[in-house]
Amino acid sequence: MPETTEAVRRDAGVTVRRADSWRDRRRFVGFPYSLYEGHRYWVPPLRRDQKHTLDPEKNAFFEHGDMQLFLAEDEAGETVGRIAGIVNGQHLEKYGDGVGFFGFFECAGGHAAAETLFEAAAAWLRGQGLSRMRGPANPSLNDTAGLLVDGFDRPPALLMPYNPPRYEDFLLESGFERVMTMWAYYAHYKYADATKLRRGTELVYRRHPGLELRTLDMDRFDEEARTLRRIYNEAWKDNWGHVPMTEGEFEQLADEMEQIIDPDVVFILEDEGEPVAFSVALPDLNQALRHVTGGRLFPLGLPKLLAYSQFGGVHELRMPLMGVLPTYRGQGLHAPLVLATVEEGPKNGYPACEMSWVLDTNEVLKNALEEMGGVRDKEYAIFERQIS
Image 1 (cartoon, one colour):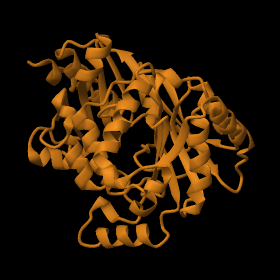
Image 2 (cartoon, rainbow, N blue to C red):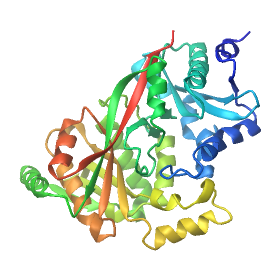
Image 3 (cartoon, rainbow, N blue to C red):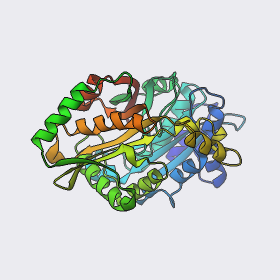
Image 4 (cartoon, helix red, strand yellow):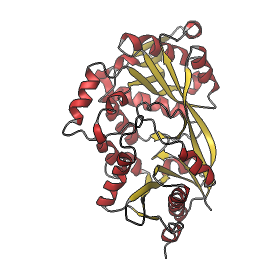
């Protein structure tokens, strides 16, 4: 009997099986929409996007990664949970640490059901020769990732996760340990004090007289996207858990961002005309997606999304990306980028911005955000356990 079959029979009331057919995948995608139906704070992602994420023919992650989906069912055959075991080839090539991932975890049952799901993913990862399991990553840390552990009484920003408080208990009770904490900082211009950021920015420009700040050039979007990828992969290469984004993955991300990006709040720092740092802030479309029932664009979802997006329903930003080339690290180049976002955002209809996520180990950025009045609005975590 295959190991996965043995592993998923641990709780007599719950059966976990592979979700390989198109019907199973449809149930996998659809489960959160029923689980969180009517929830005040959960924001339904577009089903189309969720399907693309799981489709090997449409998601560039599968150029180097693999994934096995699982569904948990009760004795009546009703779906009560889901999970994916994930192999990230880029991660293994860089670290060689035997770490696999789990993601897309949702569970309507108790700890026994959750443990059965974790064991199914772990058994599959063991079959791939891996010895540790880390997550959640959906499917990688370059995508929606992390478990919400504080800040449950407000909706998440764009491309940030939401989950019930009990999920952390499930993980800890199943032997997982927290291996990284990440923060979401929130800043509103009415309460922000940018005095130190301005001083820091002035100092940066005095030290580097060749520095100039500009906004994204949409007429050269493809070229600009390649520049951002180059800086991002260099800037983040020494950060915890980072894996470089492939050309295909970044092209995919750029295509998605191009549809919603506001170039007036995307900034590039150049030194003597050479790009050396950047920041990307995106309109927080979750403020509009909250009104798209069930994550479906048709028949009424698309008109609602457009209406809320175009007529003042989106009035906050999320900054998901910032990068400074290693040769400029420790020289305060984050200051002009954050300052520009805080000052230009309100002028373009965005009085507030979430900066997320910020690694707990990034003391420089944490201090800068807190000094300007940014508050730790939400806490996320990554967990890991031995599986062999």
